[in-house]
Amino acid sequence: MPMYRTHIDCSPAGPFEGKMVVSMRPMPAAAAIEAIQICSRYPSVHGAPIHLGNPGLIGIGDLGQPDFGDPVSLREDDIPLFWACGVTPQVALEAARLPLAITHEPGHMLVTDLKNAELVNNS
Image 1 (cartoon, rainbow, N blue to C red):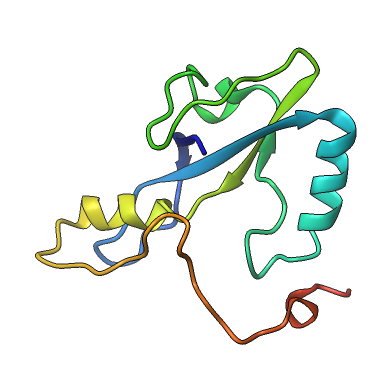
Image 2: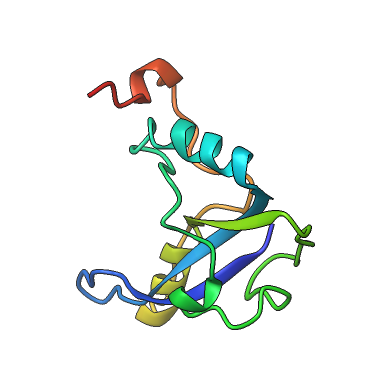
């Protein structure tokens, strides 16, 4: 999955600061609408995309050159959707220049005993 550094500043906390990293998934408009509707129900996990459409508006110059991961192809009818990415804290850790940090491995995120139904925003 391609991931990109944006020009969106994250709120600093102590020595931790940096730009938001986003992951991108291209999909046709109808699927994009459905993805936004589904993901919006889970704000305590990834939640809704933070941006869709023109990547230049969030500081991404070339979708073919991700900062992390591998590029993907966009079909003619695809819209790029961008979600806040778990690599963002790693970028903040990098900027903090700590002597040691332990973090996740891509594809192996937080494991919890919470059920999906408990994570849904029903408001």
